Every structure is written in C-alpha cells, then in structure tokens.
Length: 385
Image 1 (cartoon, helix red, strand yellow):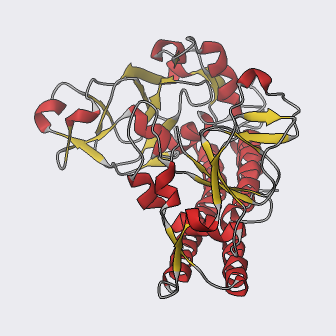
Image 2: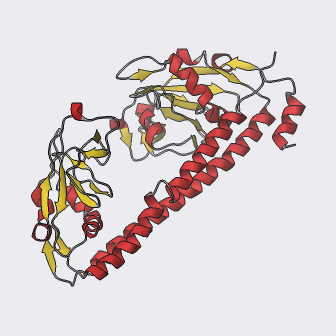
Image 3: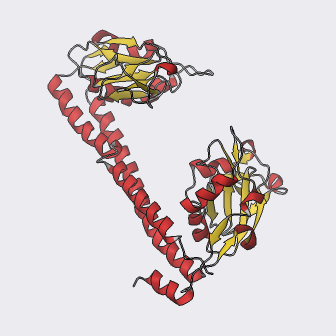
C-alpha cells in the first residue's frame, strides 16, 4: 500500500467532501496597474499577461515592480494565494493560474482574480490546472473574441477538499513529475545553446574560404499565391505562406523535398527547411538550381545569420523582408565533402533539440502526458455521501 493509500485510509476512508470554491475561499479582482507603470525597483507585481508566458504553476519571485505611490491603491495577493488570469483570447488559456509562494504580498493587475484560501496552495494550483477544472470553466466562460470567466462565477467551481496530509502527499507526488519535466527542459535549453554555438563555430571557422553571394550560387524565387478556399483538409502537401506553421494543405506541390525557404512577410525572416514536397505561397522565398552547394548547408548558414536577417525586416502592419537581403548574403564556399561533415553534426544536434519523435522534445511530451494522467487520477476522489 502506498503512503497516499495509507493516508486516505486513515483520514478519509469513506470519501472526500466536495465543496464550492466560494465556500472555502474569498475571490476578488486584481488592481489597475499597466505595463507602462513598471519601474526597475519598487513594489513586487504580477501582470496577468505574465501568467501565460513567464510563470508555470507556482512562484516565489517576480520579474516586475511598480512604484510605491502607484501601489497604494492596488490589490494584493498574500503568500499562498492563487493568482488567476480571467480573460484570454481562447478557452484553453483562460483561468491560467499560479500559487504565489513568496514571503510578502504582491500587487496583482486587472483581468485577474485573487483567490485567498486555507488549503495547500500547490494542491489548489494543481487542481485549477487539471482536466476536472477545465470541464467546469468551459461552462462558466463567456465571450467570443475575448473569453472571460468572472471572479463571481468561480465561486461555483466544485472541488474535492481532502484533509491537509492527503493534499500534501498528492503535492509531493506531482512535484516529482514536474521536477523531472523541469530537468528535461533545462537539458533542452543547454543542448540548444550548445547546438547554436557549434553551428556558428562551424561556419565562422570557414571565414577564410572564398565567399559568394547566395544569388550567385542559387535561384531565389518567390512562391505562387494560393487562397485559403483552395486548401483541403486531407491535402497531401503542406502550404507555407507567412510562418513556419503550414497555413493548410493542398493537392499540389511546387517545391521539391529537402528545400530551404525563407518567410518574407508576416513572420518575416524566419528560416525553414522542409524534407517533403510542399507548396510555397507568394510570401515564401525558396532556393533552387544550386551550384556546388547543399540546400541544407544554406539552411544552417541562414540560421547563423538570423539576427542580421531579422534586423532588416521592415516594421509595418505586416512586417516584410526584401529578397535582396537574402540574395546579398555571402556564404563560405567549401567542398561538398566538408559540407556533408557539417550537416552530419548539425543534423544530430537538430534531432536532439527539435525532433518530436526521438529527441528531448519527445521525452518532454511523454513526461507531460504521464504527469497529466496521474494529476487527474490523483485529484479524483470518491465523494463523501
């Protein structure tokens, strides 16, 4: 029998009481400070937008501050409170929440809910990011362009409230899963830095070699426009237009496999490589008719020039990159044998860092699935009659 089973047998053998969140917590709205109010030092604050991009499930530190004068009329989360973003552009992200584990109170922005409670803060954070809660928030949410769940609606959320020793053991188990994922994420970041370092070194060490403009060793052409109504769900070939994510699929291709391409509008300056035939739309630049150079050698070379390329993107409502920026880049010309050696090494790094079937991302995805399975299982209790 596991320790959790023993605790359940000891403290709640007949089941667990389910309670409304409003009966065990006080839920209030955040304050009104904005990003423009940030200062270098001052009163710690958390903006609701940061919950989506910076924080995971809990934190004890902040990345932003507001002036003490601005903080006077703000709303604060106390240590162990839950901070929740109650507006989003999609149902998946709305109600993203974290437990505030800092030693002092923290100012919280608008579009947020502050949940003051007496439960284990990590237990509540895990529950509010579980499938059980997701099914409830879908029914509470309203809006189309902006999805919202009002703090008052959160009062109706039902959740199991086991005794604290049971909550603590569940947290211990789930923490072990999240720490494994965090270790893998850290390893992935280290590998990516290593990958970028070697990629840059492998090209810069050939600076002494003769160089040629990309336009002199290949044809760089714009793709052909295709409209969304012509795309089909079961199309055989991906269509690349203004990002590295296919805009859809088509039953024809205009570019052969193993070709480098550059996005020239929208996500302008992004570099892609496709190992299957695809359709390049008119905001996609492709390389063909190469002269003594591998297509993928160009791809990795362009990645070393990513910062320069992005710096030449014309900022506008639709960012754009001139084809001449790419055409005039000078690439080291080395033997095909040397190119193949570089590609072999960089391909191995690329697999480790980016392959979703065999690399570290695949292992992270597997760990995440395992964590989500056990999280939802551990947070499921027989209801006390």
